[in-house]
Image: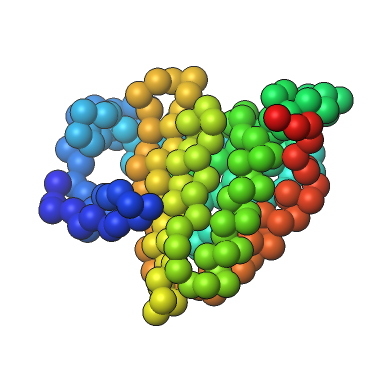
Length: 205
């Protein structure tokens, strides 16, 4: 693997490889398998199959950042317990996450996020967009996703994080989105606000 550059986001370090070389180690059907570090993968890494297909039957809110082969998409299908108005159980949402970066794809289905997590993330994103400084974070309670989006005064935006398949421990994808600027934030903020309005935080602590 070539030397990787580190991008600083959310006070940490996000590794963004300049290029990745994988060694072929076998064959599965008509697709070659490659070794990337200690993980054997296909050219497209699927942490869980058919992530969006199982949710496509209903109306879903979609929250996206980036563009073709440089994008993260979060879809929310609904509340896990629609009739529960307690803070502890009534704010769980069911959805899916997809990350598509430079030929590597992670699909996660039946992801559990929370309405209060999305509300905090929405508020932080609005503040980052308005001030062009600071960092907005989405860190899920069950560690499906850790996402950080940082705005710089010159208008550039850094974004990256980790998605994990909680049903298959050890499977995760660390990613960094490239070539982003402040114009990419507005559509995401609109989607976040619409989702938060559709699924407001219920109950109290």
